[in-house]
Image (spheres, rainbow, N blue to C red):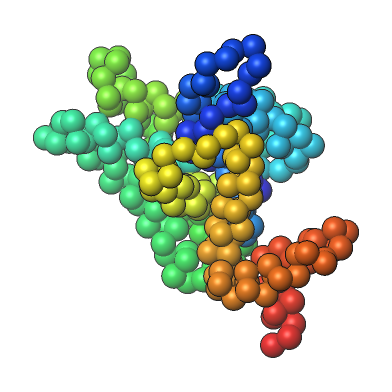
Length: 272
């Protein structure tokens, strides 16, 4: 299962010989592909269109969990799309902030919160995949059914173009994807795992300001992939780098997979 996410980051394009003047700044993007609780890979692209994810996910078969950004659509055969409940909920949070006295956004948010409460109970109980699926089937399915009915009713009685109307339209437009997690215990309710991995980049971007050149993008992506994977796998980054970096100069390229954080952690577990 892959959860993609994207984060803009300034970069300078290669200087063209056809233009003697200095190149202007260009906004590049770091796209994250990851598995909840598993490894993370960042991919650097100079654009935010479908070209990047289409190339990265070429041949991928499985569940792709993402928000409703159109670049994620039609990426190939064999991909099942799962929606992000957090993104669906976000529009109602904005509507509630805009009209705090309106009971409708608060009502919808309360219904979303009940779905998340089921997930919290599942984590607290340390459910297996099968147990989490059974819990969702018993508790979340009726909650989702009632939520959809409520959204349809609200949408029918409000003017188009408002924050609340847009929130309803987005959620209902994503509904078949939002329901995927109800049928698969491996799928999360949202892609907050992925979103959380992008926060350091968003914060760092304010300090870095520029990558310097397009060629630096993939290098930054590789470093970010290692750091975030270690964080997600609960690996001590200093310990990992101290052991791995001295080996790189003489290590066979055919065995480089043995030095990934995932393999390193597995080897450490065997030693212990």
